[in-house]
Length: 402
Image (tube, rainbow, N blue to C red; front, side, top):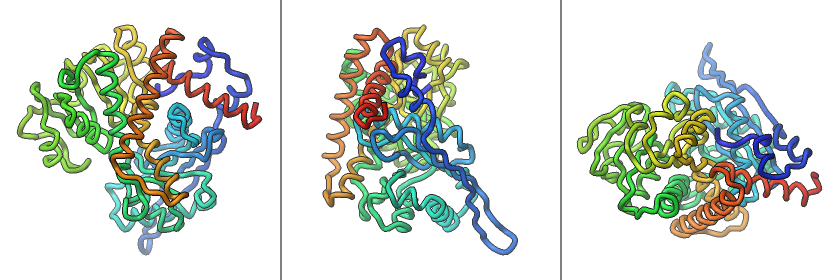
């Protein structure tokens, strides 16, 4: 449950009927087929999706998810999350998302590049007119964004590009930086602990999980558990993340078997006695089946939609707060906005400045969430939704949509 229904939010705020209608349906849904002839009698077919949820704040912004599991329903849900993520961060982007239903492990690099090019051709007008601005997401990365740039030759048409062709220093680490800042604030403001006193477990060691771990480790946070889709590791004295980077240099090399920790399962990681659990991989991993077994004091959502509605209800009843994904992992889109702005103006921004901007925006949002949470007597997710909805409704009024 990444976001809360409009109906539920009505108990906290006045939501005009027209705004409710605009926010409970998508502005545009595009579904198409990508076909690629490899050789005689051999053709690859895969489905592509682009969804604009709401663009009252600006052009649709959201990453390209490439996975054999992606479908139009998931793409719609993720586009909706992006609407509220951008509104909460006060970034002039609307909510969008795209997907390519493809198992990238079954195609070579040349075929993958050709499929990305076909994806661009299918939605070329959307990209050329900046109606939709893609970025990396699960299954995609900077090289894919470079291919998109190469097809369009417009640096502002895509973010998450390699640095040498107009990408942003720090963009790769940006989502993890935002999640880490959320953890620091959680420790200081909620748990009342110093960084060195905080014990953390991280589920997922892809881009988000590994850079979250990196920034936490640098500040002295004790990371006792890490897992990926193949398995996990545990060390009660803390895991040396820099050594783990060498053992698991990318998302295709498992953390399991790390010599300075004992192997555990993903299921065991969720039961560890820690201060903060960070689900940083895929959606729905904390749910009604395992929420009773969670032993963390707080959950910080690094992935999109990792805690289900039923799972969060159980956690709430057990007194375990959840900091929502569209707040915690907004570092990526904050950095994307900086890259997009620079592409249009010709400015350049150094990596440390990027991190400072992310830190400031995350901290400001956290302070606003805490203030609203106290006022409405709600959860962190309800308070974050209240702020995002207020931004969206006011923007609708300013654009005469209401």
